[in-house]
Length: 274
Image (cartoon, rainbow, N blue to C red; front, top):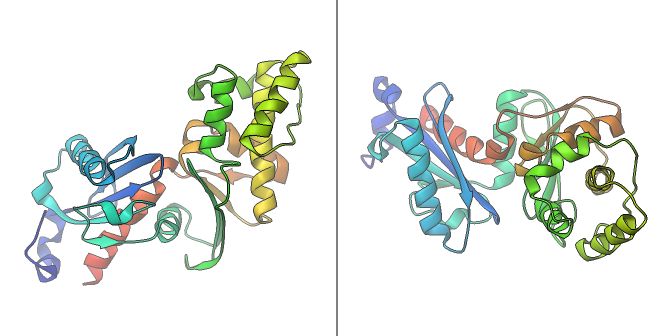
């Protein structure tokens, strides 16, 4: 990675460099490498584990390898996420709220309501027509409506988390799940199984309960954009939310990488600004 100082990148030499964003979440770490045109050249996703520093370095190395970019060609690494202060290669640090806004605004450059559903929390972020934050809500107190909630319930059903999306799409009957707490939901699911409800209808009911939890956090209106690992692996969630609100819900490319991509964009834009 370049260490010669900010002055080097101002001018004609900028095009030979690349920028990286590393998003260390509580569940997964994501690294993205972009070029001068903000095109994603490579990325990697892995479990965060307990060694954030070592894991983030390994994740970045994998992303660079996939991009075919050397560490020396990086102008800047920007870290974000829950473990953003544990990224040894980071030259700059940004909040995940800022990075999700930046990443979404790149694809949807107008006022929007961003819903980020991660492994351990859920955020609702409102941005204005210039991409500036207007309001923000987060569920900090429990895993309701998050990836951890779905993983725990999938385990209770004897399913792999990767099966949930396809199962929900085969649902033919609405099953209401009223509990948000993982423990109470598991008990409720056992009752539904005993009643003979089909697994696919129960799974669809789970996604509908996640939608309900989001709507109770903050009313959603205008252009709605979903990001995060949950929607990356379960795009049916965007359809469920759209059906409930009777509107289109948008998903950016690689929604799990939105934070890391936004972090890389910060590096690029700030270098360009000088």
